[in-house]
View 1 (cartoon, protein in one colour):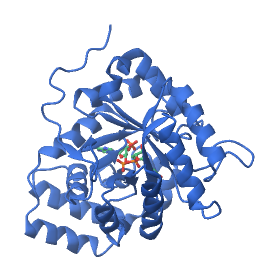
View 2 (cartoon, rainbow, N blue to C red):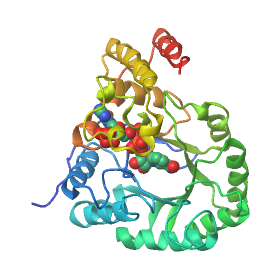
View 3 (cartoon, rainbow, N blue to C red):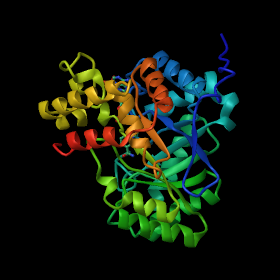
View 4 (cartoon, rainbow, N blue to C red):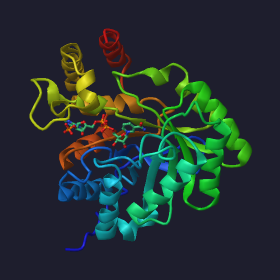
Length: 329
Ligand code: NDP
């Protein structure tokens, strides 16, 4: 049966302005790093994308190498567009990135103009798109002049392959330098995509301030610390969970962190929220943060996340209780 999105999809979602730009993003955005690859069940990914859009999630985040295998998340998203979402292309903000390892040889990694432009051309082909809304340099490359990488982003926007340029994983000083170059080229930096969560607060040490000063938006990735800031691991590691499958979360997993999560869960319950929802409210309490960029393995996780947007603001006592727990991290 043809997909018809929910007529009420714009009624409950909160949209927040991205820095000092004309673009607004949903408070919750959906990333396709995991669970949308070639090895995952297509119909599950499709159901999640449809439900997300029904709930007002207009922003879907990809990268050249999301999968596995590399490129397959973009292929999956291309299939979802072709089957369901293509008629709503102008209601969507679709992003992709290049900057990490993608193909063999000297032109498939890092920050050269050669890599960025050809990688985006490949991404567009995989998704069946004429352009992406946001194209990011995925991580800084100390070996390529910043002028070259920013010049490539400017060219990508001017050539119509992307509407906006973004940076990911750049430190505060690198961000200011990159933003200055982009501004001088006439393609302002729209957005920065850093990691940020209760268990990973590096952005509070200068990056958020830099973004506010520069008028750049911020989309916080892994706001649930890949699932540790949910009730998933409070009683042990379930089968099929991300921590159970190895990967980067397994390396960061510790019983001490689970114990902190248990204590945070108590604060969340006191607010009438799940821990996952409180973790999202907490990231979004920062005025500099435009959107929380979640991942999901099932539809219910997306519904939980969107429900977090209607939670009450934090009281001073709640914030102090959370702070006391996080100080032990
Ligand atoms: P999260 O921190 O949101 O972790 C998502 C995982 O948490 C889910 O896959 C699920 O794990 C678990 N989870 C989510 N909701 C719930 C819930 N309600 N109850 C229980 N468990 C839940 O984000 P990700 O680490 O997935 O990253 C999100 C996106 O950020 C990526 O898709 C990508 O777009 C972007 N990203 C960008 C990076 C960059 O360098 N720019 C790097 C990493 C990510 P499970 O699968 O076990 O069910």
